[in-house]
Image (cartoon, rainbow, N blue to C red; front, side, top):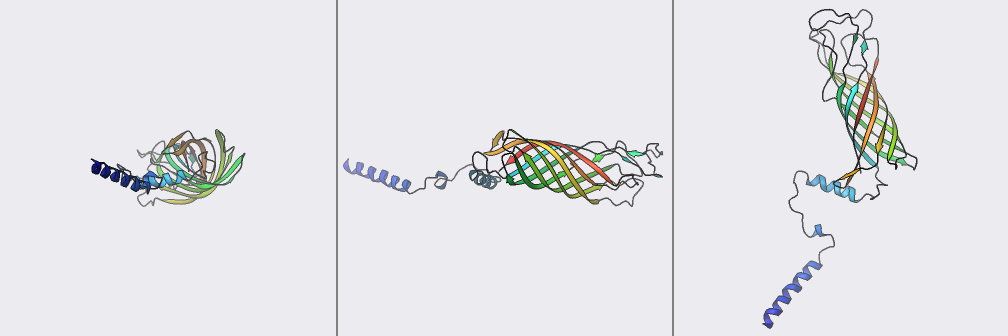
Length: 256
């Protein structure tokens, strides 16, 4: 019996010795099981970033906005001498191309450079695109009645009361615009694709962090932005040289 008890004590002492050599952080001794291999690396990287941040969020300098909404573009009036031909081949009396609102998706990145109690100044990039094309109220044989768009615009954003429950802001910037037009049926030699510049002016409202997803702070954003740009190629001369692309969007605001 004494030998058996002694052997048990030796085993227990051996286990305690091995366990005591392990660091305080448990994951260093025992790897987690059942982790999804496809997203494990991403989650790990996000966990490192979040764990290094201040719990109160005072040093969260980066934001990513994921938004969805609608783009509204005013109609374009034809220049003198231009006419529109309907899809049935008849000459139309109307002298403007009316454009319907279009669904749009966007992503915005910001990094804070100046943070005060009453205001903050961020620099970043706006990306806005149409998963569905902007369409005219009716289709034409001799004019573009449908086009897709993409805006890529660096900006400066000025936030007011950045630590408050609600933070209003203004933004401005300038960048790149791309339009991809649909070829009119009466113009087979038409070449789609127009590159031009854009000027951004916008305003909106951000909320304080509302929920945490995988310990990542998430709030909400609503905004109105005007991407003032050159024109797509309508294949007809219009009276304007520039057009307003008004984006009404809202969505999630991720902070890290």
